[in-house]
Every structure is written in C-alpha cells, then in structure tokens.
Image (cartoon, helix red, strand yellow):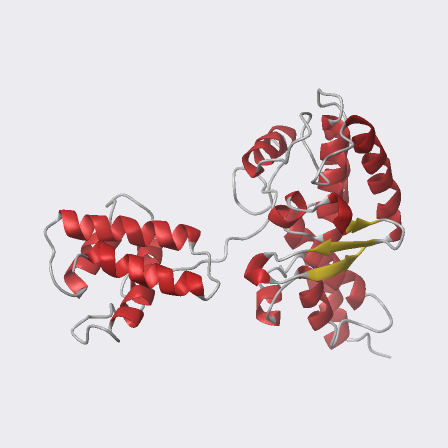
Length: 301
C-alpha cells in the first residue's frame, strides 16, 4: 500500500466524524506524495517523518514542528492498523504552537479605522466596511463568522445575531449592544435598496459574498500607518477580537460585581468550547494589570 492510500483512508475517517481538516489534510497529502515519490515503502517511520517535517530547510522552526505534529496525529491512527508504525516523539523539533503578542487597539485607532473606511470608493463599499469593522470591534466576532452571516440571521428588532455552525460546528446567539443597532439598520436598508435579493448580510459592490482576502487587503490599506504595540510590522484584523476580550474583562474588573466567575460568560459569547481558549485572548495590558493590582493590594486605611 502506498502512503497516499494510507493518508486518504485516514482523512476519510476523520472527515466522517465531522472534522474539516483543510490545512492539515493538504499537509498530509503533501507528505504522502513526498514519501511515495522518494521511494519509501512500508509503514511510517521516524526517518521519513523527520525528513519531510524539516522541509524546507530555511523555514521557521515553528513551521517544522507544526508539520511533525500533523504527522503524529496520522501516526497514532495508523498504528492501530500497522503495529510497526513509528510515532515521532513529541517536541523533538520543539513546540508546535506559539502565542504571538496581539495588538490591542486604542479607542482612537478604532475610530480612525471607521473614519478612514468612510472615504473608500464605491456605492455601498464605504458603508459596508464601516459597519463590518464596527461589528467586529463591538462584538469580537471571528471574521469568518461575520462574512458568513446571512440576512435572515440578523434580528435587529430584538438585537440578536445568529452565528450558525461556526468553528467546531457550534451555533450561538450573539446579543447586540443597543449602540450597534442603528448602524446595522442603516447598512441593512442601504444594502436592501441596492441588492434586494442578497443572501449574505455583508456584500460587495456586486452584491456577492465577500472574500476574506479582499477584506484583509482593504484593512491593511486602511491601517498601514498604525503603530503596532505587538512587535509586528502591521496590525491584524483578528486583533479586534483580542481587543474586545480585553475590554470586556477590564470593564468587569472595574465594576462593583467584578470579573470573578464571569469568564465562562465571555467564553460562550466568543464561541469557545473551553475557557482556556478564552484565556488565549486575554493580554496583560497596563490597564488590566493596574485594575487587577488594586484588587490584590487595596489601599491601606
């Protein structure tokens, strides 16, 4: 049996369980073709796994570790069918994941972003980007979720957006702050006039669904002069989600009730399966640390 046949069987099994495996699947198919083309025969072993994982040689170490991690998942499945399969040791190439410091936007930067979007060309395009970026900032939605929202999933009368089958195949209701209703209504009315048959809530000037690459390109143009506080050369669209999580926690810390016991609420709102995923979004910004320090070190009487 060729490695490609083994990998295809594994991917078919995992996908039958509901896993999409887009990136991981492509990497495994790449590995299988490499193994077969190099003349490898027989079960997966350490030598072929490491040889493929460390390609290309000039790539970042984290990328090599991630490739090996993908191989490990396949190997742990394959050993049930082929006992001679060798599972690569964990972390032999170092950790496969690293949390990059996110950029936490200031209120001034968010205001500047929305203001700049208003000067874009097009009939609906300026209002579309203003409303899209505004929704990301005030609700902390994933960009993929936002672009997939359909017209019937936005209930502006009750102030609720339905997110259907997002990451991990989870659906949830996202309540809107009253201040978000008016801009969304304004955009919905304008979109309805131009594209009454639109399926998606946010559409391009052609009435079609937005592509993420298009949104990312426009976002980078609008934020090219922003100074990042994350150490990166540019700010990211996804950092609006990080900013939302930090602002919510800060607001809770500064309230009379405090933040204790409320993280699971934020976790569910963000669409996480575990609160540990939510902790990933909480960054130790000065305001958060100052607020937390006051809780542990109350002023002396």
